[in-house]
Length: 96
Image (tube, rainbow, N blue to C red; front, side):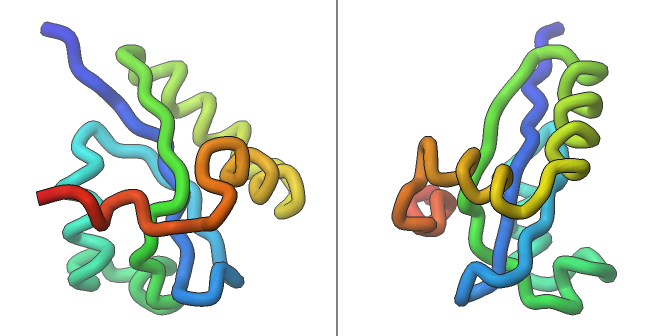
């Protein structure tokens, strides 16, 4: 069975705090972040805006990609986000 995995970036209302994560269900994970169902960094800093994600069918490569991005300087993460979302809009707003 093929599964889809996601590396994603979320931020707060003014894009000052950035979190990189991974999941196998991005819609569920965003619901959890937006409703503060996950205790920790994202709830503490009110991170609810999905600004970037990429997909893979390989869990190992997804975990590696998440770790790779987390090591980057903020400027490189910003540039990555701006390749697909130059206005830093919440990509999850269009979901039902």
